[in-house]
Image (cartoon, rainbow, N blue to C red; front, side):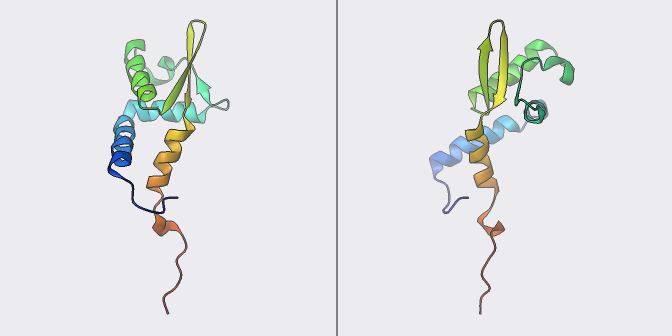
Length: 105
């Protein structure tokens, strides 16, 4: 939970994360990986019905922004959510106002 407003540098980093997520395909990719029991996935073309180059483009953006991690195993690349990126987003999106407030006399 944030105790004070974020800095300009923190805002720039979070804006980059939010911009990466502001795409329906990337949101679906995040959802698909998050829904997996093992928390990772390697073949994401079939569930989205898009071509491999299109999926690779979106995965590259998610990895570059730190939303996904990529683990190369042989010829396969496995993608997982990066907990640090999600923690940073949730800290900002969960307002301090959501905490119980003391009543004013």
